[in-house]
Length: 152
Image 1 (cartoon, rainbow, N blue to C red):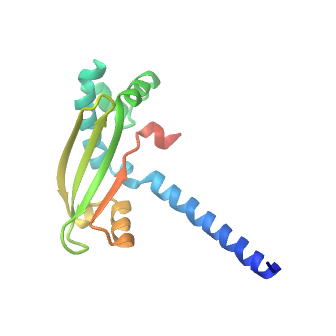
Image 2: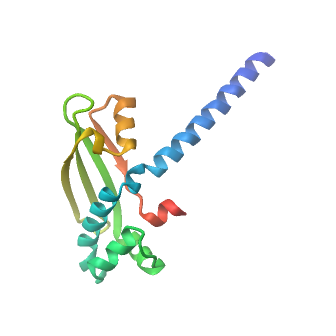
Image 3: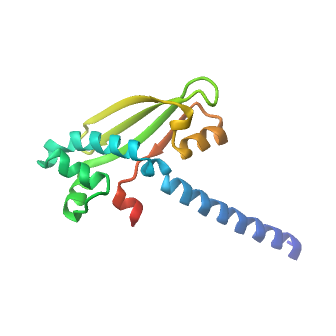
């Protein structure tokens, strides 16, 4: 392999690494967590499911799940009980028409719940709109991150 080919290969690898790192930051952050309406809706639904399991008040859980309060013991219990939370956006018609946003919550004990709400294109989180535009797919799934996972 020539020195020029090696240089091009190395340059491509560096560019790919930078791109992957930027995408990881973008999708690790998933601005869905910063949208107060979505954050509060997810927190309320998760709290409703976990309150009887953890024997804690719904309001205590909402405080932790929204990041308004910190309690490392309760955070560990939530992490132990919750398997996953996903936001699934299904586009209606053409780009700009909006989407159904479904919040899917799964617990480690097998219980799961989902709720769907309609959102206009402008009400969708930036990450969902960007994914629709980038991929052209009709459905975009974004993982929900608890506030303590995003912060540290």
